[in-house]
Length: 213
View 1 (cartoon, helix red, strand yellow):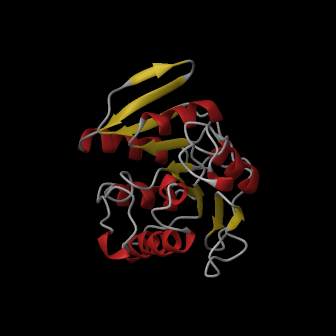
View 2 (cartoon, one colour):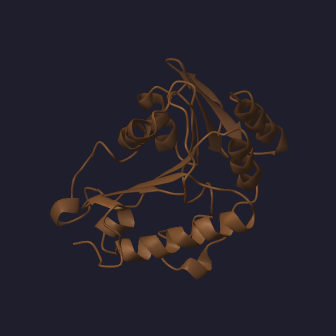
View 3 (tube, helix red, strand yellow):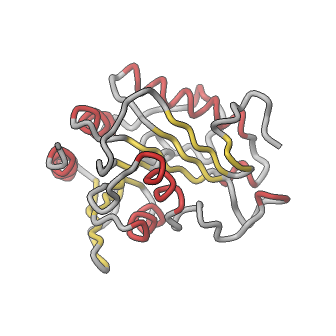
């Protein structure tokens, strides 16, 4: 059961959080920048549950800021199996996520939507579902964001630190993804590019700027 601190509009079902942040209005057909959270926006501390432990990855700040300047929605899509496993609850997630967003705001980097999936086969009760359509590598969170914001998924980009992030992007119909500390690859109309150094970062920034309306 959801913690009372969780607002009803955020927890739309037992294992799915959908939170619209801010009041920016986007034209239908706008591409988005999809970002994983733990290990991509912030350092992965293995099921982060303490807001005080959150440290941003500095290379993501110019990426988010570039999307903000281009008028492209920034959408966080994060698996949170720690909830299904009983390590923490949605109220803890809300506090940690709030800290991530706060740290970003202090650096003038803004997120427009957050989606989180807690479904996992290791969970019990309603959260104990294997291969749930909302859990990456399935594309459900990206598709839900597209429905809510009227996004053009084919022109959208995704950045993550796991192959599951890239696979979710491919299944959602995106054409490009950047894998933190990963290797380049390509499969069935979807290209994966590495994000390891300043040259890779420059390529990602150029791709975002190319989406300028």
